[in-house]
Image 1 (cartoon, rainbow, N blue to C red):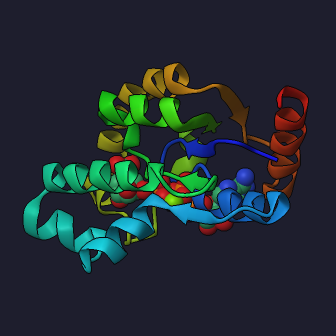
Image 2: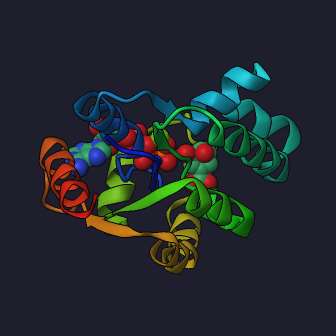
Length: 170
Ligand SMILES: Nc1ncnc2c1ncn2[C@@H]1O[C@H](COP(=O)(O)OP(=O)(O)OP(=O)(O)O)[C@@H](O)[C@H]1O
Ligand SMILES: O=C(O)C1=C[C@@H](O)[C@@H](O)[C@H](O)C1
Ligand SMILES: [Mg+2]
C-alpha cells in the first residue's frame, strides 16, 4: 500500500493524465488531475482563465489547488505541465509524496499536443513552446524522484514500468 501521493510531472503531452488514470486503477487509488481540479474549483476552463486573466492568475490558482490536494487520502495526482515553474509547488509535492517525471523528446510531445486547442500555450507557436520546454527540463529533472522515459514505450508499457519501479522501491 502506498503511504504518500504519487505526483506525475512533465511537459504537455507527456501522458500525465492518461497514465495517471491507468496507474490509479492498478494501485486502486483515487485519481486526481490538478488541471481538472482547478477548473472544477474555479468553475472556469483553463483556456478562459488564460484568456481573461493571463497566465500569472492561472499559476496562483494552480498552486492553491495543489496545496488543497495535499490533504486528501493517498492518490495518484497528475499535474499540469507548468507545475515546476514555481519552487513552492515542487516543495509541496516533495513534502507530500513521490514525484515521477514522464519525459519525452520535444518532437514527440509537440506531435501529441499541437492540434489540441484546450492547451492555451500551444497557440504561442512551436519555437516559443520549444523554449519553454528547454527552460523547464532541468526543473523536471531536479524535482523528480524517478524519471521515466516514455519515448518508444506505449502507455501501458509505461504504466507497467512505473508499477515495477515503485514495487522495487516501496
Ligand atoms: N506514451 C504515449 N504514447 C502515445 N501517446 C501518448 C503517450 N502518452 C500520452 N499520449 C497521448 O498524448 C496526448 C496527451 O496526453 P495527456 O493529456 O495524458 O498529456 P498530459 O501530460 O496530461 O498533458 P498536460 O500537461 O497538457 O495536461 C493524448 O492524446 C494521449 O493519448
Ligand atoms: O505546460 C503548461 O504550462 C500547461 C499545461 C497544462 O497541463 C495546463 O496546466 C495549462 O494549459 C498550462
Ligand atoms: Mg494532463
